[in-house]
Amino acid sequence: MIDACSLESKPLLTVNEALQRINAAIQPIEDSEPVDLKNAVGRVLSESIYSPINIPHDRNAAMDGYAFSSHECIAGHEFTLELAGVSWAGRPFAGQLQSGQCVRIFTGAVVPEQADSVIMQEQVQVDGQTVRFPANTAIRKNIREIGEDVKSGALLCDQPKKLTLSDIGLFASAGVDKVTVKRRLKIVFFSTGDELTPLGQALDSGKIYDSNRYLLNGLLLDDAYQVVDGGVIADDREVLEEALVQAANNFDVIITTGGASVGEADYVKEILERCGEVNFWKIAMKPGKPLAFGKIGRSYFFGLPGNPVAVVTTFQQLVDFALKRLSGAPEAKPLRFTATCTSALKKAPGRQEFQRGIVTQNENGEFYVASSGSQGSHILSSLSRSNCYIILPSDCAGIQAGDKVVIEPFSVFI
Ligand code: AMP
Ligand code: MG
Image (cartoon, rainbow, N blue to C red; front, side, top):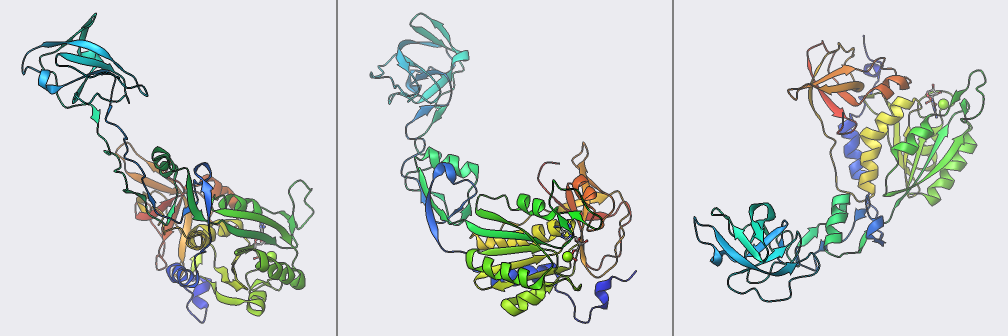
């Protein structure tokens, strides 16, 4: 079988070429704003953060036990020390540790200055005020040193970075309660098509439910974005043009689905040409060949295909990269690795394919992937069953069961 694309007069852009063009075209947003640490997860850090303190701030115990000085230790022999007091977490031992003494200590409590060792409570015998240490007592152990995690003034996090919950925990441990992040990206998305029916209404003949806005709503869940669902636009040139031009005044990014191919009612590319600039509008990928990228005014425009599976694939392979770059986040490549394919896969040379698969791991840690079923770009059931892409290079002419393939999991949990 010959792929329809191989009959095109001009070779289509590869996915990689399209990514390069997106990369070259996009200017990351510059405006920043302060946010409370609690609201900073998922935002793009725009100032480098240095620690104002040592972490730990004090020398403290790594476990519940007894703090003592190694000078008290007699190698190879048991020894006893007198209990001088207690160091609680948050309430340090107030006295001076004298020779022949030790201190009861709890995890996180300050270790008295004269002590350099903590022994686990299970290893000693306590009799009233006397603590018996075993012959094999280890010294200079179980103490967390000042600045062992982070030294005062050290870099906690370099900008730019899309903040994770671990970053937030780290900043909190340093007492940093506000950070400066890039402002949120303003994104609007529309569905186009006369056949689209809102959920909750009965379907008339020839109509379909609008699944794309639900998909986009989920795909755009990201703390760095402020997203508006622009609704459905009919297949009407003027109405669509008016909506897009209007949106360009208010949003950084406009995303549409449908109307991007070459049918009679496909106005997207024509409007983009007239009201803005087309960077590209077709890519050698499957699903997802018609994909218009360009600008309307100062707004970046993505005209995605109508078929729902193609919406997801083009979003994940191209739009997501563009939005991350625009939001100022550093590039994060998706995790890809090799698996043994247990299904035969049909493919014609010509376009890079993102087939939907189900990856499993056996007890030896080896990965296997099977097709999730019918691969039409309108078949949402096989997308829903899948947990990964099987990525087939453009020149691949099909896969036999047992061949190795490259996969990209949708999440790291399978
Ligand atoms: P188009 O690119 O407008 O020709 O659409 C291609 C296919 O995708 C057609 O079968 C449309 O009915 C379908 N489609 C377009 N928009 C949506 C949508 N929002 N939800 C589900 N299917 C859609
Ligand atoms: Mg349409």
